[in-house]
Amino acid sequence: DVQMPGLTGFEVARRLRERKTASQIVFVTAFDQHALEAFEVNAVDYLLKPVDAARLAEAVERAKRRVSSERPLNDQLEHIVQLVTERQSRRERLAVKVGERFLLVQSADIIYASLTDESINIVTNQVAGTSNFRTLDELHASLDPGVFWRVHRSHLVNINKIKEIVPWFSRNYILRMKDVKATEIPVSRTQTKRLREYLKL
Image (cartoon, rainbow, N blue to C red; front, top):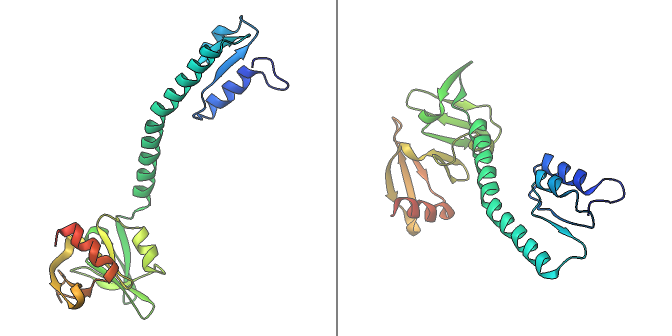
């Protein structure tokens, strides 16, 4: 309605637009002089009382079509914002403690990270040391999830640094990595299925 206690219908419509909600507005009123204002707030329709039921039904259907056409766009925008936020939270370089020094390594150079005696060990071809991250979950959250896989509760690997996949007991696998020691890392049963699907094993 246009005339309401407190805010008018147009004031409500403007506030909804300012908040960028997905609400669709149909005015139903006895006043015909506000049709231009209804256009300005992008109302679906402006119906005069007494309201024709068929016209009201048509307006509601038009509002539904607007919602369904805008929803995919809103979903896409939300997805883009989420991707940008995640990308901003990823680290291109990490500090690795070697002895008493901290060395900065490129995330893409990390071959694997393992949890050993409550320390997180990070290995590249040039550096082997510990991380200040408290858990592998924390470390994983700061890296690209499309590249770094948690293949085991104690191991996180860079899938681009896998040298060889070795079949093991009970249809499981061991990953032989590209570090100088050719470290072997077990794949948990739950991650074995994902590995098979990804690499078409």
